Figure (cartoon, rainbow, N blue to C red):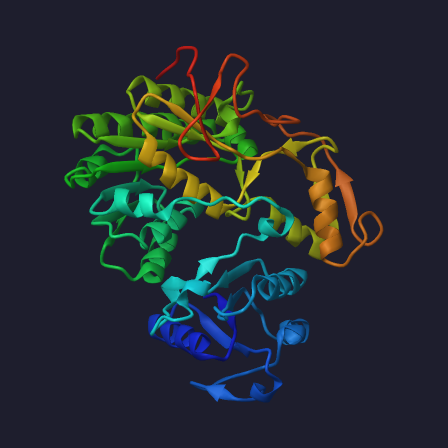
Length: 420
């Protein structure tokens, strides 16, 4: 069970504590607060242990996995300060109660949102028209494969804000499905433990009538897929084909396949499986969405780097390696917007900004943590692993980008043939 500390001893913090105690999905260490007069006070036998500057000392004697910032009236600048101090203390699981809940009568754990650490390094701001999303998703029934993964779980949390009819979250990860069910605590959401390559599971799940299928389930780690090609092909290719076929048989109007920049001129086996699947989706008049690396997702770059920094070094495959990055929140909002405008038979590309030099990003992160790159923290350059490129692309040479009605979302003309 994860151990959490709550920042904010006001009403929001106390209500979050009550919600956690009721659900039993975290162990609460205590509270932090800016007001020194509150130090030592207790609520539900949980003590105010100090302020954010005491975090380092607290962490020496207590394991802390998660920080929840329950200060909905705090300025964005103050929130950023707290995030940076938490990051310097190697706490990467940071959640916040949004300012929208300042005037709410009751705040529950399901209202907190994950903080995207990469926001600290990014200057652009992606906004969407929530009114359009609310109107579109009203009354919809949706299937999300890979529902317990980073993208799937965040999609469900964003959809919970809308007046949806039902969302079914399908995954093979029993533990994460259970955690998500507890976290959502919403009767509109149903979990389904099953395999997308299994016909029994698909027959059972498609007994429900879906308006939309969002297919996020896949094996994504390039170097692991190179070692375990069969299981990756089975899920990424055969699983996608089966989902498309079942969706066609059941007259699903919108099918959205989450693809990757590694499907563009692929050299890795993972990229090749996603390319084949992407082609099959398009040939069947459904939609693919292509984007790069999702920062702070399970097994992604920043948590890996932080674990290495704690050991005094960071490994980088190549000094010139560049990658496209997007925060989970950006990815979710752009996926939900793409569903709205999808007509079938197209590929959407999310605006990922400029590719980021990994070496420069790591140097900056080391500096944010108060260290000097190469002096305090060694940077070790290794070779590119099998299937990896120096730099990825979002479109192929003969593909053309077209603007859509949504900023940051582009449509490309699909070229070439392929399939399963």
